[in-house]
Image 1 (cartoon, rainbow, N blue to C red):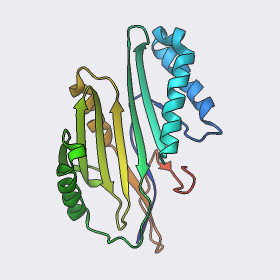
Image 2 (cartoon, helix red, strand yellow; image 1 turned 90 degrees about the horizontal axis):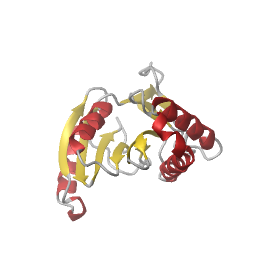
Image 3 (spheres, one colour; image 1 turned 90 degrees about the vertical axis):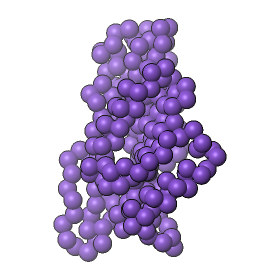
Length: 213
């Protein structure tokens, strides 16, 4: 039997991974802003406001149970910012819930979401991720962009939730393509609790569901 212990995702070099823990995230955010200003000097005059923006993103990510968050900030606050974000969460384990196979779970979830009026504008499909298997993919592009992947955890009633967002995207197609490319690198990590060797992945983000990492 396998137990999930972490996950891996590849982010582009101009993205900044944010430390979500309240006791350490401010230092992480300051480093991220320095890196952003180095890449794009036009951001220098807005460094303080960017720190506030990323702090709000990190705080919301932590409060929602996220264990990984990475952000991109380009442009300037005067001419217009491109802000993009990825958040990874894992749902609580429910030992009483029936554990369905990935294909059955994805088909049922996709059907349920397609019938939900709250998701009427979403494009819903079942896709296969190279390193994670079948997943439900939801895309909403209305003003901003939201691309979400629901990935069943092997031998569990849990799911990984990958949420990619950009609040203002007049041309959403390139962002959706980028988000899909990032999602294709997503790979869960498992330990075999029966004693056999588990998968070993480079660049793993480890987490503790009880402490948000």
